[in-house]
Amino acid sequence: MRKYLSATQVAAPDVGHDRGKGVKVLVIEDDQFLRDLLKTKLEREQFEVSAAIDGPEGLERIEQGMPDLILLDIILPGIDGFEILKRIKSSGKLSRIPIVLLSNLGQEADVEKGKALGASDYLIKSNFTIDEIVDKIRALLKH
Image (cartoon, rainbow, N blue to C red):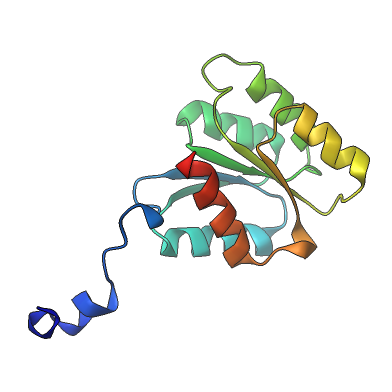
């Protein structure tokens, strides 16, 4: 059967749920390079991605269209990630959105605070590749 498919069809096999097709991810990250890198990688994996540069813009984007998952930096201009996490988890309809904290803050107290506030996962930026972050997103969305 494969010999009858065009080269483009063979190059892009159907992998079902492993792709992000139709899944909305919001990236709230003030570092433009990392934000753009995450956005590009997730879009290549067929996720629908929106991005925000700071806390207030992140909250605005959440109100505009409820994402399926949020990647959230902690140190942000305006409103920090912990406060955003607290607000989302205390809001009835938003509280079920999985939130992955993505930060350079690696102190145990920060990790524990994030988990206590309801983060689904806490990733220290320097410890994970972009591919590993995408794998974490997929794993969280399967549950």
